Length: 268
Image 1 (spheres, rainbow, N blue to C red):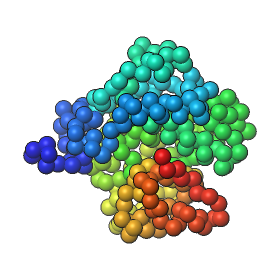
Image 2 (cartoon, rainbow, N blue to C red):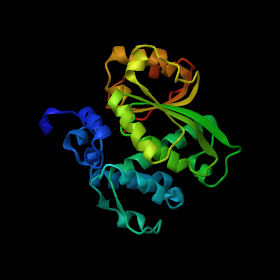
Image 3 (cartoon, rainbow, N blue to C red):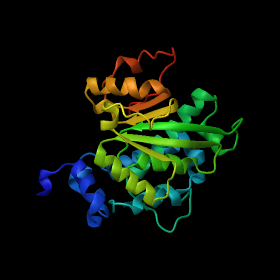
Image 4 (cartoon, rainbow, N blue to C red):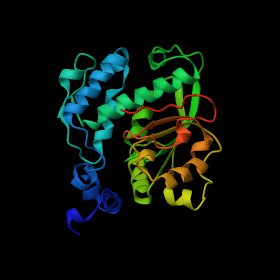
């Protein structure tokens, strides 16, 4: 098969059994056309947003743990010492640009969730100022290679907010690659489901209730009839939502929330 003849899903399939593909999938142009395409310029803009909104917690983030994300798939990296050196001492400051999107988005998710549920902020979380310990169940629709899930676990390590379970729903080979990666990185609170399981109503893996739904460029990319399938089977189990989509209203459900409260969504 010629490289131009396969998609990012084909890359995922091949990465499951071909270790050379697995070790380099983040450099495959077919994969990067869909994921792992944040530029250095955009990464620096995300860092500016980090400083603006969450500057006081940058030094408290475990950047060594965050950096593990780049140990899989051989991503293109760039030097970010100018941005990070005054906050944290590291042996080197090379990161994939996508890391900064994941970190900023992760902190935004945590901050919005805490503000809605407790009235506190992510800054309160890092300063140990939560009233009590919180455990949450998360479901993500469309999880890439599991990068956002990994970074959320890393951001919440040793804090007063714990992820009890994290379920990702995705296409079959994409889901299997998520499992391979996150198992290799020793994240053991994960559950994996495929879209086919949703279509076939094989829902035993789903919990009856989730505290938070995440879908970043996932639900918003789907046809309306597929969105409605997710609404009936997954979304209505979720108390809060964090959804990023590409400039269009994805469904009236997310505008006219049935619980009379503003759903958590953010269009970047």
